[in-house]
Length: 191
Image 1 (cartoon, rainbow, N blue to C red):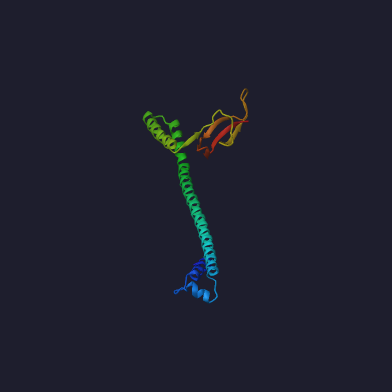
Image 2: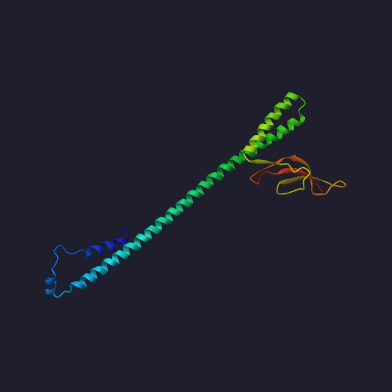
């Protein structure tokens, strides 16, 4: 029990009337003034009540702060778990992206029609998976070079009539999710 509560309890005990109350006549006979004594007891009780109310307000304030801190902790923890899940998911998807690159290369070099159709089906499934996960392709062919989405790994002099700083060829597509680049596109830029 806190010190304030002990003091309040002691004050309340002192304010209790004795087991055998003196009558007013006996009290007056002893020379005591009952009204002053009652006033003193009343003041003691009021002081004890104020102390108890202050302690209760303090405990309520501490409880509310603790409840708010716990709620903030719970929200932070939930956000951390959600971010960890999304980051783990993105890591797996990054490892799967080369499979799509290889399927596209296989499609370009395939001569057999049946094999080509099979690869196209698998590639469609792959693209659908990326779309369901909110991943968008970055294919900046013939667009102005943007270093926020592309990585220039080669450059060639600009031909007549062609402006410098444009993507001439895409070696590897890039991907982004929610505006954040997962993998930069590797490109050749006119210089």
